[in-house]
Length: 483
Image (cartoon, rainbow, N blue to C red):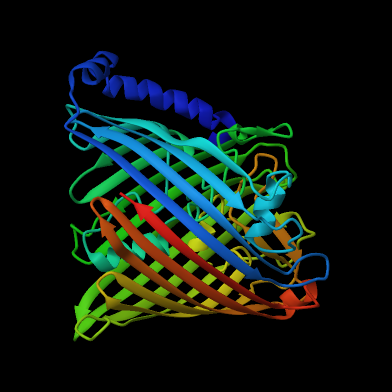
């Protein structure tokens, strides 16, 4: 196979050669020297969050705790006719992390940072990139450096309904910046974009930074393992909603190779597509969503064949008070009915932002299927209220209960397995979110507030692992300052 002949680093060098043909060095130099910035920006975002957990209980640690965190980002950018650039500093600080938690984010933040302090912080460079625009091919650009990448979000639809669906129900299922965590992650590499009014082609070749729950996101090594041994190639072709109003479609191919020397060492190919459609019907708009992927490759030295799909639909009443939006959906991620044979059939999420799809992140989409109902209300122009109910099962009761959102610390695989105990009933979850934008304004400074509460009624699988208490409560309040 091609990946056996060329590593992503070789592909990267080939892309650089092609890039130099398209973006001649002399032209780039002149652009950097002579093309004065037409726009310079400084942006700032500070999120202060208090998280409270009352978790599942197996009797081995603390099942109830609260901690506070601060996540600050300061960015500097410029844009011109030929070159754009951006750099962002990131500082995360924790106060009162639990030192004996058995579950939840508090356990992960404390444990992955060597567990040496309950009040820890770290600053790092989260982004630093340049984008060069080709002067003789309209819409062609090359970005190099450290940047954020969200699979499925290579373009932003003009239609507001499609825009929300793409950001919240399509993007980051397989590759994401994990930005909800207090650290997040970025990607080092290149991105070639050919953007046209009706369609877009994006090719991205990157290696992830550390991060997520691990503070030292600028340190690629830990315990002899390096994030530089994880290679990702993504090719996405998107049909924009400017071609057929109300329709956004994409086909994609992702290559993921983890060569850190861990027991799993996946080398996975993913081929998939999404389709979004919305249309005004009666007093509102109907929406339909499809996302699906087929995977093949190697996982733990076994042949890997797996798949996943999502089907969703909804109706939004545009002319009623609060514009109620009701949605239903189904997700299926394949599992392995015989973990002891030479075939691995569990859907692999690669390196996603899990929290978009599991607001209380006690499970992920591997060996999982669920149905959900969702209602979204807008009682005020600056306020959005959302409530979801999920009924969740394991796809195969001989497989595991999986948790995690991909690589965090360089020496950790990023996913945790817990025994199913031969059952498939995982849980029922209900949650409520309130998002308030521009709660207070002073000049360019804006203050927002996010509130979340989720409750989990654990099923047989949870009870098998946490016999003393199989219920969970998660609450957080977050104040956001930005300009």
